[in-house]
Image 1 (cartoon, rainbow, N blue to C red):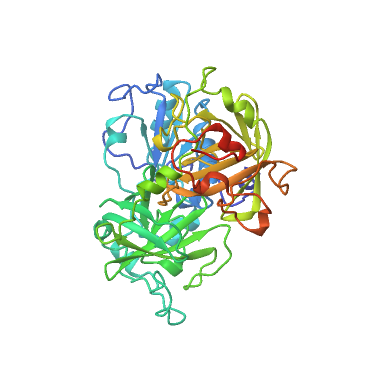
Image 2: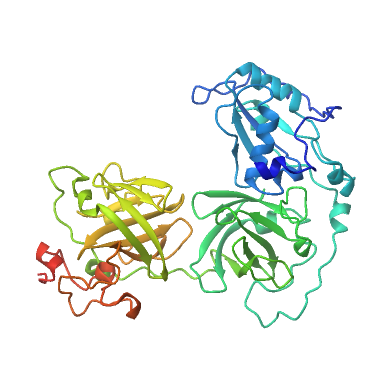
Length: 481
């Protein structure tokens, strides 16, 4: 926020002229307001933001909105901002304050002079402000768009070299893409990336809405349009999917011979894309789901060999066994054994991931288990939901004094050793300070290891080569029947 306040170019006060362009029927009042969570008449929806408010992502937009809205009265918390940066909601304490904010702010043009002069032909209707649940807020809404002539004037890109020999996703995007709407992209696409990373599904609607995986909803916008917060001229004529997999990631998409071309970027990456844009992660391609190869299911016999030990639930309660997890653990994953993460677990099952993320272990299969995955509903197995961020979760249990971990995300399409979808990979955790010590209990000779970097530590039950239900003696290396 300090950085925002230090900017001399942005003014968050309403323009003196209040250039309002209010459409009929948008005056807010008590009529047509849908009661929601006891906050009827206090929740306000905002859309059609100036480009400058979105130029630095969600934080700047939230600060810009808060500066405008709190003038009318106190707010309940901070404004909520959609990942696509195209919609926000805020709750006032007083319905009168909410009505006044709508009356004053709706239709006001908050654009900076530089933004107006840069595209004088743009038909902009001003800030959209309406009561949550009102008829105006529920109407289908389209952002103000530049005339076709303005988009046609976008500079044509020339590839810097011949990318024909490179993997999919490196072909030149057609300049005419982005002018004809999103209908040509509508469908379910299976996206594959250049490093053979796990595929993921994109469901694209005819209006440009995109569902990534099962729960993440985003919005495509024509690259270079008013709704594009990146404004990368190298990709003018394509479509932008901002916050594609998480915040600080984005993708440019376009069709080429029926194949969806994808260029993926993130703020952490330092490579340059084939068209000269920074923060490039890599290319990908998407094929319609009816053309994508269906991933084979795991062998049922192998699934039976890979079940964690299953016995009766303990009489002392679902979370009686969390005391065994107590301690500070160093977590590492098979995909990246050099990077570790601390988990601090209390006897009651409270978990601190890193320093700031506070979660709780729940017994798999219990009424507190939000995933209810029958493949992991075994005694001694616990769920840690939203472990690293939303839409990630882990199942874990203890063997040979170590925690065994199966990590999942909504966006991955792998299959776990126990037969569950959305599998990312395996992990293990050691009590801090014991990472390099060999396990005390004898280990069956058939169990695989990760390799020399973890010493004599086995991969424990990630690929358990034992058939049927185990006896407790197997946990100490005594074998199983």
